[in-house]
Image (cartoon, rainbow, N blue to C red; front, side, top):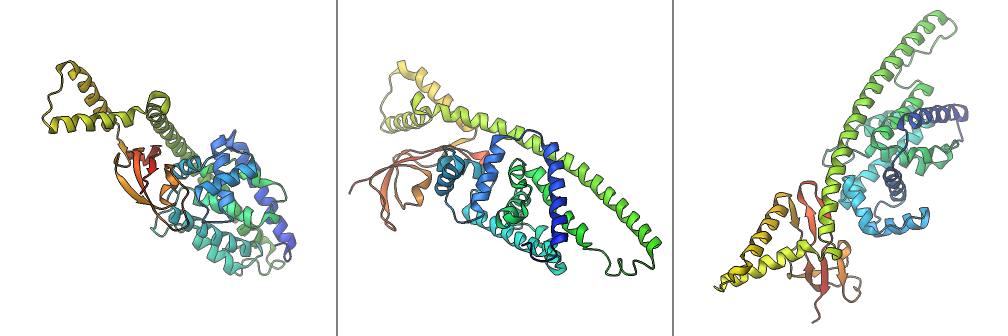
Amino acid sequence: MLNINEEKINEVVQNIHEAMVRKAKKSGKSSEEIVTESRIFSIICSDFDLAPSKVATLMNSNYGYDMTGEEVIRIFRNRKMANPNERKELFKWADNVARLFKGAMLGKKEKFEKFEILRKEPALKSGKKHDSQDRIAAIMIYENYPEIDIFDDKNSLYLLGNTMAKYFFYDMVDAVRNVYFFNENDGSRAGQTEKKNKLSYEQALRKVEQLESALERTNTMLQDLQDEFDEQLEASKVKELADFFAMLNSEKYGCILDELLVVRKGVDALRKSNYELPIEINGLLIMVKKLVQFVRDSHIEPMMKIDSIKEVSACDIEFCNYEGSPFDSDKTKKVRVISPGWVYKDKDLQISRPKVKEVKS
């Protein structure tokens, strides 16, 4: 990239680095989950179609993790990018933003103007601005143009969550704008020698405007950080609830949620056949009924119908535990649902994966 306007480009890079130093001081100690998310984003920057299992493989080989595709899916869900089509839209938008940012860094005003329009638009075709889009755009710039990372700021960028990364991205924009005086009147720098006093006054006004803008942005950032903290607090409560029900349905405790469905289904079948249940087990049946009601009231629901038969492809079972022979490329197989899988409906959070077994012809 550094082939023309090298002095100005170096000034932009220096200003971006100084902004990163300020953000790194404010961000404090970052969580491992934020770093993991950022690394996943960086991997997808090179291939927007990567499946969760492939992302996990690359995380393991590139960064020494021991991840599964299921863990990657959980992170996608937490970041509201589980839909592969929307995820691709998000990264394509970030790629276009990065390309325009390169032109802006080279001093091309028309590229900067297009960049300014695109970066403010929602990344998704649905018209919704994604929580992580500015963070991903910043990561995309460093991934696409590693030659600007002379201060090794990319690793520091990985430490920033959505809010801090968003405001660092804004600082990157300001760094370009201020070096090239973009968005100023075309004649504002003309007649520099003849109008030195007037220009100094204009520069002072501009400095005041910059400080006012910086103050306003800082106040907004503080509010956004508070909102992000509240969201994280709520997310931690949701995770605790999900972990509780995941433990209930673990093999260690006999897959209690699955067994509740089996018992309820069996009792209903007996009652439909007019079988008179022994009075001695009434207390047990009441307890089962109350447990089922408790699960429902907690908005925990099965994903599939137990014992149902489904025809699936290799893609369909990527999010299931599958038992059977390997899939051929485009062929489908019949499977029986052994365990329905469970989801926390309010947050669309998967608690346990469905288990399916191949039905032999």
